Image (cartoon, rainbow over all chains, first blue to last red; front, top):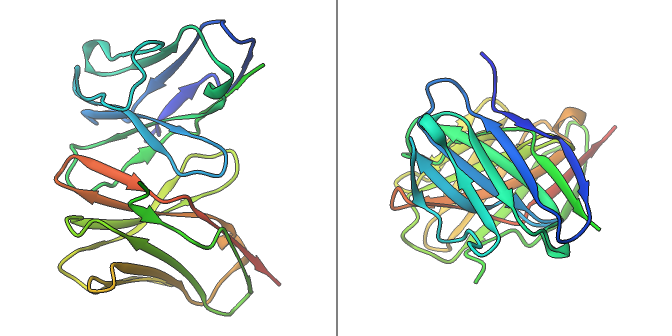
Length: 114
Length: 111
């Protein structure tokens, strides 16, 4: 069974440029998450989807970040414009529901903003 | 406000010995506690969990202990192997709403 797939693995951009990350969750997983992991820190939730609905986006900086999960499968996370402080690893995860906290993570997309 | 704390950023253990990773939390409403393992350039992978109604859960070489009165949990790895070298994240879950991660402890197992 394929795991969570993310792309791109690495992205280097200049500040004020836009960037987008894509995630394909494990087949059948209705819950999808985007996390951000800063250097030396644990992952922090940006947004959680139940099917197509964003049920928790309280930590998403809505002035520059946006996300969508069309048809309740793939998801895209966008940053526009990027700032130096956005440099981090962006992790996508999926699960069957959200009952015990067991998530399946992708390999992450490492963003460097110059 | 760091609700899940891992105060040791790193730990070095000899192969075959016991590794003990610690985690403290502040919120008494947490329902589950989990440990994730992360290798470089990979996403975290689930390792073991424990319900708040239990005080111990064992899975092969890995055992998690929960002390609710002290708001403390620990992960024991016995015996430690070089392949266990990774960053270990403690995480806590509550209200079917939030999963909060600690800052991680880097474990190095040397021969």
